[in-house]
Length: 395
Length: 211
Image (cartoon, rainbow over all chains, first blue to last red; front, side, top):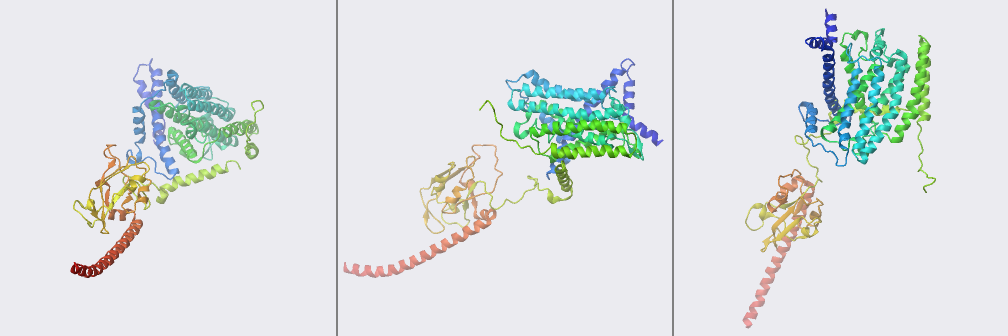
């Protein structure tokens, strides 16, 4: 009886949708089903955004031995509402020399592109809006178009800080897109599928009560590690927040945005964090599967969102710890450290696949990766001595 | 090894994060409007005029009668942003040393101009102007309400003792010494005058007799 109850709880949103859509005539049902899911996604993630902003401000406060916001409502929990009202009532300023159409479109394009990524994420058992065969490909293709929005914002503002921020953002996001994809490719190599539901299904086994998540393999651990670094850079989060670079560039590409357009950029940044964390959880942390076989009765969507919030917590923790990188450090790190390791990880994944079961592949794969990490860390990342630049013709 | 420093940093911030929930001494925040800490002794905001409660001379309210200021106008001249305006009185009053002094008929400080440099305090030879620690001075009228007059500026010596106890004690000791010296001088002068008066009388008499 309980099994049945928990099964229903697991599928509660799917059943609810069926009931709601069932009211309509059969011809409308497919469209209504999609619209309902879209509405839920558009409502749910901004709500999660409000929660995450509050947690971030409180968490950062505690990390710095401060109290964080505590004035609006008990313990400051109504702070996001106050922030929302503030951004809605603020004046929306468009610079007189800005290209106002592009200036207006940039935040819209960003938020739309980010929202589209959620379409293919499996958020629970049978809970995926579009179960695409090439879901992974779609996700990264859509994710890459956020760069366009950021460059639109920087270029149309006609402001040196905005443009510098946008240039940095594009350079950074394109550089880190490569390791992001490269680290995800190992998962595709293992599962032989680009479908995210199949990737989750491939991790949904247990041995001695422990899950077969990809993070618990040498190549998966290395892949997840590099994926996490690349996502931090991809979402412009500290320590890779050069595009915003508050202390150097005012606010980077959104210097000239105020009021609700700025709030949209803010929303876009957090939604990108959610979606890319959800993707990371799907690829390496088993998506909606439970971390122990005895916990499989807990609804799958609880696991997915727990993993999501845990990733957000790590993002906040990193932001509270690390100072911002310099542009050359950022680029060196991407091209000289992460990318070679990613390429090596592809080879390691191949070795893992073809060595068959047994303890030997664990030793071999781990040894290669640890050795590479140590060697690359020592020689690849050694301090660069930068002398004043000399010009051959200009002097 | 690469990444060691990052792990150390993460451990440190985690310690802060959890520690701040368990150890109250980690949170140094004073939630200002509800909680406040006593201002430190060396704090200074804007100047005020000291008055002594014991009446020295003349009528009027206590603050007016007891003002130490003698309208010498040194502070007005020294004030770098020129925010002090003084009008000297026509008549004189006796100060605590029993000396006839002018007093300020008008003494205005525009605290919107004042830069809290304390130069007026440094130059005052009469210990009459000191720095206050009150800082909640916002008003709705930026012209009228920020121009403080004599009455608003006058504060008793007890207030001075409360905000700067060490300094005020030194000032009081100095003033008591001055007063003692002045009294002794007055006494000796009186004695001398008395003695001289007697001899004078004696001298006058024969002269008168001679005349």
